[in-house]
Image (tube, rainbow, N blue to C red):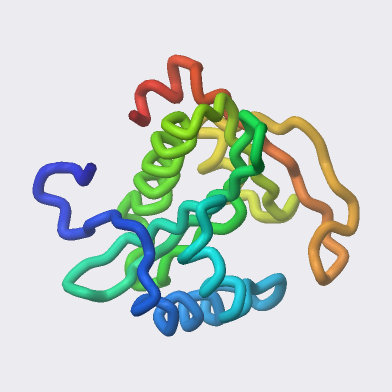
Length: 162
């Protein structure tokens, strides 16, 4: 569901997107990267939603949710936007799309982890309605702490994103 006039289309990732996803992952992250094998698995997995933002056939960003059987908790596992496409609201659009998909699967909460030193991402997540619920020491490859955040998918803020 793209805003009228948006040049970016949101869609489920396809096997043909794998090389672009791997390139984006390499460019966006210095560590804790998803492997080609992981992306391949998530494209096909019934327990994942891997969404891409595309413009003119080019992948501009991706977001990945995981789901567990018999759970009402969805997990935003990873999100990245290519540097040349940042500042256009793609992260919030992709997360909004994943929120809708999670609600359709019966989930009532969306959880994520973010580096404690990533002030920009933390502020963006808070703006989208996520709230801190804890910390995980030495979560990342380099030993950095993660801030765990969660959002209710039944809150007034969640309905605005729908």
